Image (cartoon, rainbow, N blue to C red):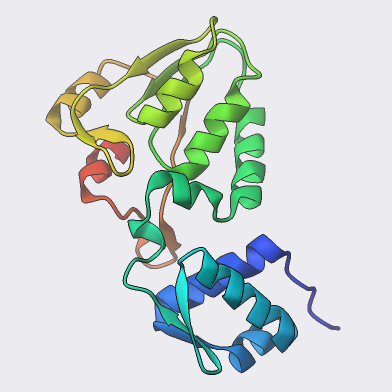
Length: 199
């Protein structure tokens, strides 16, 4: 039975994952692994190069000095946006009007914040500047931005002040953006300063 073809965002995200893991990719290997023609893979690599995610070389591509996780929040929000929006919509379906929600930072949480605007009377506790701004425009929401040190590149607050404030709240749900999941080590995040907030 032939493998199903991947959608464009899924395929490009997978290319970046492989590139981050291996440091370089070959068109022939990607074509086989992702069940796509070499022409399609070359087109994907060209598009990802235009967006600054990789550098094309003969027969493939290599990582650029600035990879996915070092990009500004706004730029990272675009990559895999369709998948992030589907995750966000599914998460928002679990929420009920009147719930208290904890949100951390991250691009998927941002899209979740947009989806949460369909609800009423939510109490949102967050260290995400972008989520707080997005949700602060909803009159029936009570949005609490946890104050602390600011990571301006990725738009979140962190530190002991954030942790102390967080102890005051109990939530129905916590919605967290993460950077990776591994069967052996569990959930991981890139930002050491946000690890304590996520715990």
